[in-house]
Length: 179
Image (cartoon, rainbow, N blue to C red; front, side, top):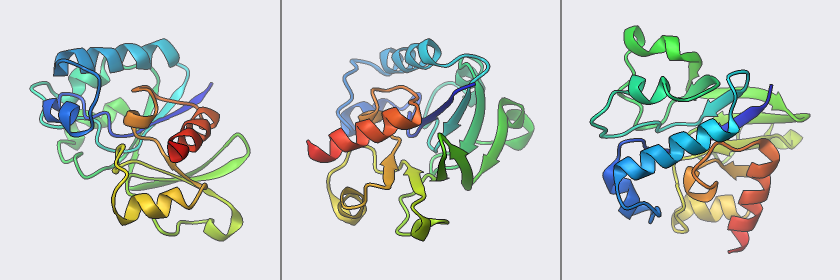
């Protein structure tokens, strides 16, 4: 069993292509590329932590996407996850929460969609995995994140539009901070 992390796929959201400069001509191409990338990496035995904003303004239901994606899924709610209807969607997830704490590769992690200034275990070298800011390089949240290497942006826009393992997440964030 492997653990993967992903934030802000925004399945079905045509405007996100332009807003974050995603390399896709259409929302259909974006959705299919992310579904394919997910399923090439993740097996049904793996766990995927979706750190918010799974879909937005899609013509399809969340179930349309979730039924195509491999792995046991844990949803950390983001600002665009208001579509979640417990009676329709809970069976797709192992857990649903606003914040989640776990250990992976010997590291204590705190997952929340929003970048936090401090989080549980902050003074004990825990890592904070978040989304929400996509690939923006503006604003206070980015400046704070840029100076704190224990904050890891799981957004698809800096992680090759696919779920990533913890070390990949660390490496991708280190590279993105330097660009």
